[in-house]
Image (tube, rainbow over the protein chains, first blue to last red):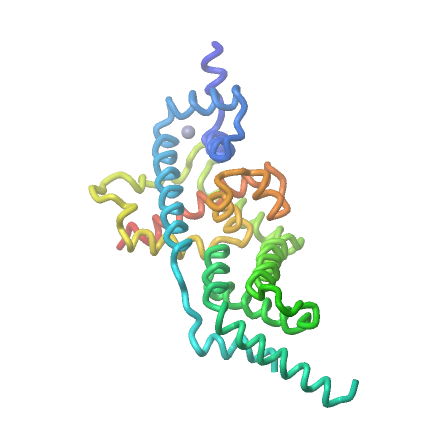
Length: 86
Length: 198
Ligand SMILES: [Zn+2]
């Protein structure tokens, strides 16, 4: 088995886990190569990577919106909260 | 201290805490929702904060900023909320759910078994600008196990700084990577089930 083949020999599950680790900028050099090699030859993981990126961006958007969003407690909620102080 | 003194004091505390709820309640509720993605949990956390404020009212120094004081309590409650899911029972339950999720998605060799159509494909529109897509995703996030939710939200709040998230949730880096992976699988499955068919 040549070097490149050996490098690419991780499962999709391992690749996804490395992808997750990579999203926290925690991959070492070898892990980065392994992940790259796998995704290059695996179309299912390419799809997953796209979805994963989309989900990350959407989460970011949702939380950005919420960061600015002002919610209001209803009178009913306030009454419920104060109920236990009585 | 006479009995009437005690009654007067607790009456005061009650009035003041109610006033605080009126003044700061909405902000605290918004903050707790932002940090937990659940309105129900956010309401509970505001309530717990008010109870703590009421109980330790004598520790509040007159003249200091009530908002700062309340937020210190609230932030501790939020940390407690995520750490409460460190109990053996809760950990086991989440592990079980995670294992099942991986079994559903990968075969024995770790290859994708249940190939899901990409969310990107067959769609012209930009999903990030689609409010109903974001709404469904929001509800998918709300239904994640606490710890996974903490990881997802922490990742955004702490700009992907793993160490900070691990500290807050009291987990190891490998826990973090695995939970983030499992949360992602769960969210993708949830989106496929609840959004694509609509
Ligand atoms: Zn793959």
